[in-house]
Length: 209
Image (cartoon, rainbow, N blue to C red; front, side, top):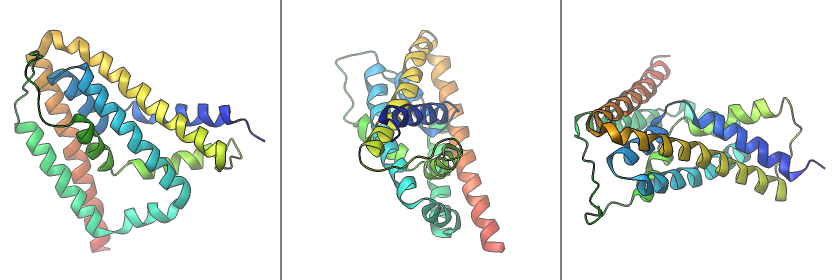
């Protein structure tokens, strides 16, 4: 029987590597840390890590069935395209409002915001389908019971470690607050716009096929 520790380490490594490239989640964590503080960035990182467990579990449970449905459903694709394009416009046009005043607290829940951004990420389940297929080339894993729990725990740990790294790195940007806030806004808007246009293009290809 394969050791649960191996499942944990594989889940951690796969998720950590998958989180490093710039995407809507890690850029949202960076933006939150720069505009507000480390605590709120960690809240978003924690929320995104919890959602990642669910997305990995869905990929394990339903595999290509879910992947094919997401790839072929035009309503989902067009809806995601509109959402991400709208978010890109909002982020690009919104001015950064950094706050160092501990007496001023926003009513917005950054944990809930993190849940929303992570849940809307259209790349997550397809990524896990690809990752699981790659893992199967090296390990004959059986995801059940303690091994499934260990793997998902590794997924959570890998996601949180990577995002926490972005939180720590973002703290440095606060020494150049004005410039860094605008830079992060533009990067995040560009990533959101790219995802939205990609979803729209894929939907149009299916519609015209």
